Length: 375
Image 1 (cartoon, rainbow, N blue to C red):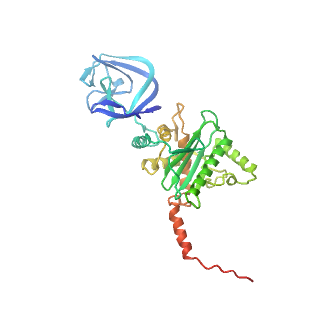
Image 2: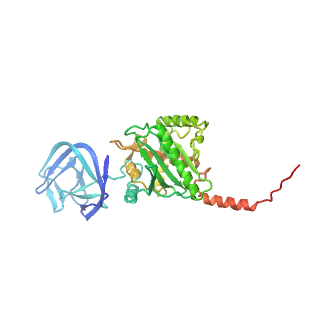
Image 3: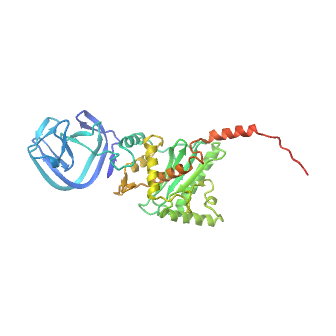
């Protein structure tokens, strides 16, 4: 389903007056029917709901010629119902408080929600995220296309995840950066033009910039952790990273991406995280909880738009198609896998300042005079 959000604040006529609505969705090509009344008509799909009084609505399959339906002027009798064949159809997203509005003076009920059944987050969360991000934009960029939504904080820790791609048109790679313990989305990147060698360098350059920036801000020991999804395409990214490491005489990926610490799934022989049906479901559940409770703060409109199309297919969440993408979401799922595995041993819920201050105090308590003994 393609959606176009009402960012300009247009209103629609409801039975409670003019009210805001969230946007318009394209629902594909379906058979449509024209209902003709004395002074108006409406074209709808067979399952569209039309009010017969203020409490009851019926779909067109339940209506017959001679039945009365509710209009802005009261009840009006149906004169004819005829099929017009298949056409492109659209729907209004969440109009007013009760999701009903007048279309061609006829009161209809819209059962389409932004957070429709099967999407990762509920409709209330989706509406909140849309409202929170609609006027947001990035604060600055680095390397031309990595969007930063806030400055780095010397007291925070950072998780960086890349969702690699083949690097051809339409196949996007994406990077997400989140700050901890605040759980704030700090930066993101998405592109379909870089090959996997260049994607490795994009990640490396980003982490090196973050490290240098944090040092400039007075952080003595920046904590930047990174990982990737290592399924299929990710294996190509790993091969590129190993080759680059070998070319500089290194032995481990840490020798090439020096300023960040690689996080690998416990028990996995390959670097990064292998996404299985079970682990993806767990990551989606964690992401859903973090978003719906408001703990995770999203700053990107692009992320929210992807999220609104992130639907349940069989038992796996993914974009619901039609040329849409889920790369930004997929990168954030790797963030969730990193967080769940490392939140305790890396103290991701504790700011750096809390334990460095304690460490300094502890060191001061046990300072001893230095004595050199020569034998």
